[in-house]
Image 1: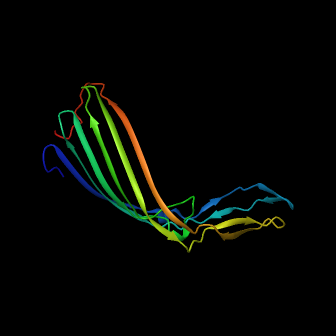
Image 2: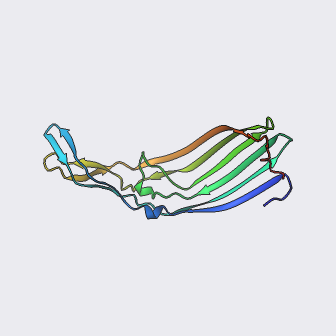
Length: 181
């Protein structure tokens, strides 16, 4: 949507079919685990259940000319998590998140632009006390793999920050990437 010649606004919905991922199977396993009781050889496939479910997000963003050589951008996002809380651990943190992005372009010359951006997303703090993530234990005598004690219970608090920059070079000298057309 273009409310004015120098401003553009977009909203979109994204659906991600994470539930279709299924389990991860490690095949052709041939490893040896050494312990105080001796070496145990494991050759069976190892199945890692994901339990992912589908996720979606809503995104709102805009960009506009704020001067002859400057374009500013900003956006917001809300996204659901694909990993159920009981399947999370310190190595896999997910959840519903909110985020924002800021950025811009400085049109330094007819032949090139300088771009920059910053994005942050936040997962609200929560306590996971029903985790199904357990230690993997290999019996040193039989080589059987079993689940050990629960290791996924935790207080989860996470945020991510991404920053970047770039240079766009126009070989034909046609730097026409402005919002106004």
